[in-house]
Length: 346
Image: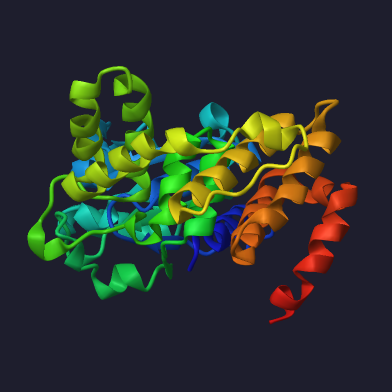
């Protein structure tokens, strides 16, 4: 399932704790596809606490607690990391990350916590959702086969790779537009992982964020720049990104486009992706300013100048996802929509 849909699933499961209809969720996916980040994003959006427990680093006693003698009986000290209504709040998300990397003795200790929401005398507060995540066995991570009794305690979703969803996230989180443009141009490189090769660095949604950081740290050091990108996303993808960025000095004048001047679209397909992505960035920065209508109108007018109309559709679609329904009130939108109506119907 694509990330945008899974965000809704996790959000609905959190909200459903209020009505007693919550089902624990298990997110499956390859390394670096954004499983942990999606859960954190939902917690932030809902303004609710998130307790992230890495089960791969736990021992059974870490969950069950430490026994201590009280009179002639033994009681268990509840671990402070588990949700407590007084300390953490009545609502929240308990995230059991790396659950497939946990030794069987630890996952067995989690059975009761996940299904019955209890662990001995401890009980998970009613307003807390339980979400888990882990890698698949074929992903070359440290994984254990999930026992059937544990698997049967979850609803299961596999995280798919979706470029549109990643691009929407990238714009919202300030990822460098050159990285976004490159991945629009080389869509197959958003995620490229061959478990049989056991690569150290490889392209993934997570490692492209690392490349964004490397770009800003090493752009002024040409002797290090390409190597730093390769260190994040692997040799082949890093070299391609460095070459793509080097070619961007041939881009047309973006300020002239924003000012409504007649500017030809570049013939090279990589530069077209770069221009489209940069203009979406300009649209985002203009949102909620006095110049928003003018800037958005100029960008919509330029959308019809691309040699392939699909490029304009991609740009306007990204723009719509980024700035929302404001785009429909721009006069130039109707004109652009009329010109591509037959393409959209097809």
